[in-house]
Length: 466
Image 1 (cartoon, helix red, strand yellow):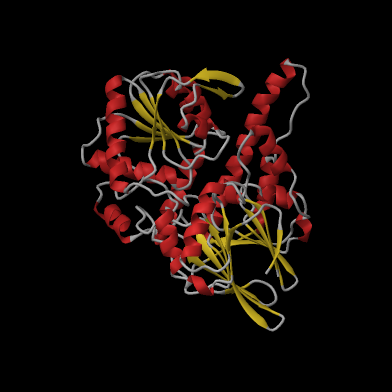
Image 2 (cartoon, one colour):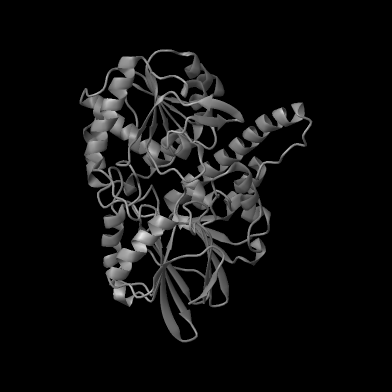
């Protein structure tokens, strides 16, 4: 049995882990690497293995850094099933179609400039047609229901509490007379999430691949972030500015909308319009409404008691789909909140809103999620003096605020609590992924001190015999 991490090893993006067991090659996640534009394009364009040799794909959840390169996998020859939860299947289909449209649109925009510079055109990573072709491979299943996955393999999904449909993959492998329990945590949510159920715990794993995004760091309480969100919106409105929030269309947008809904109901922010400017976020929110079985009891009560009977819709909230509606927001000068994808500000409409507001000291750019190295969101969070958007340089004059309390990732102590439930001394091999080196190192130290005999950070491209 062999394990190779081709992505999200030493970094938080591009999740891609290949398990070879019982004569089968199983790929856990197939995500987009996000970072410096040219490097990201080249890494995403060239898969590090023969796609046709992969027998099955298992998805942890629907964020693009976990599912976004599936069309390339299918284009390059994969013909098996992509197994995930039913909610992940619905979300991933919306995500991939939107990703393809954005790539086609952004490539067309870039190619206009390249033509003026007498440069050859560039190609999108994949097209809408290629994304559509990949959708027929998806197979959605439920939580806590074991399913066969080839000879000698049985898969069970448990709720990971990260985003709608996110799952811990629990794979039982019968190989050469031995039984091995292999677990992939995917991205783990926090123990008391606002909308979803908390992560399930496992009682044992022989081999564990575990996320480490917030190793060495803790989150402030969500209530503290609610207070800060109310203050930021109120102060920005008083200055006459706009609050621009880059947010992942899946999960974070719905968290922020729900928080603003609650602040509105409590009259803790001024009466100003709140826009969700992302066709994808509109579609995703509809998927959220379809999968109320994933909500926790508090959310269910709120929906029941709310006058709108909707956690994601209220009087001041406007969802925009068309390009014309989006452009019109840039011409309006009154205070407002604009939530738009992508979460790391690397693509889509958020870049236009940033370009139009980043130089306005009255406005606020509010960062509410993890920002990977070399992304536009990270440069803004670090408050660099100048940033480039669509190849043009802008001076950062807007206010910048960062809130970590809305994170859908478990913090350091929360990761440790989840891992301890596994009886760490019995975990034979423990690999940390989806974390920058210092984050993984901090978690390795704590896991080792807690009794894990063989905890280490996964190394990109290194084949490990299990």
